[in-house]
Length: 222
Ligand SMILES: Cc1cc2nc3c(=O)[nH]c(=O)nc-3n(C[C@H](O)[C@H](O)[C@H](O)COP(=O)(O)O)c2cc1C
Image 1 (cartoon, helix red, strand yellow):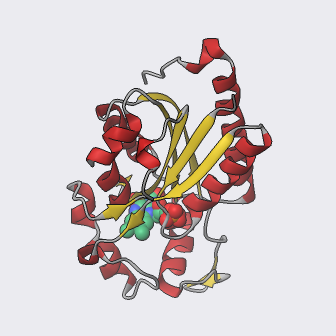
Image 2: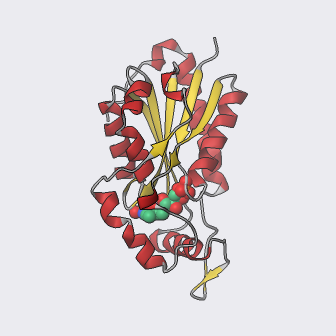
């Protein structure tokens, strides 16, 4: 039987989606049954849309809800949470050092318990740079719902902290990839091609693990 894999993610500026799609492509190429599923963020109290103008004020608006772990209304396609998957890959953007609110909202919901209880999960984070606390919190929330963590990977933007911040702010403000911001040449917004290649590699590692029974159930306790 083909391993059944769910790739469940939220994405606002499409970078987590790009990683999720690359992973799905690789899983399918390795003869796994991979399903992509996006968490929809429906909560009108926390509407988020591009462009972010004024960019500073719009970004800071998210600081408090994010760091205090607030939740909002989300939806995943009906029936997904009652399926029996061999692996669930959870994709989470970083917002203010934490998993984006839609991901936290789903992971705190009863539906997440139904999906994750006694199942293996992996985590992938997409962000400018700061993936560590995002990964740690997703792992913690998914384990609390009964899941077993097997592996994680982070996919970050090009450049150092300042360079990636300039690309990010420029994109959020303009809803477009510009070559310069404040007169400075900037990197293209998002995960670079080598990050997408690494996402495929990560999927390959997970698939190999699933297909070798001695490895498949090894929990990563870190
Ligand atoms: C409100 C908000 C806060 C963010 N905070 C951080 C942060 O603290 N650290 C970081 O590395 N990236 C941060 N980012 C950048 C995102 O992680 C990055 O844009 C990533 O591409 C988001 O994934 P997505 O494209 O799938 O939505 C933030 C983005 C938003 C919208």
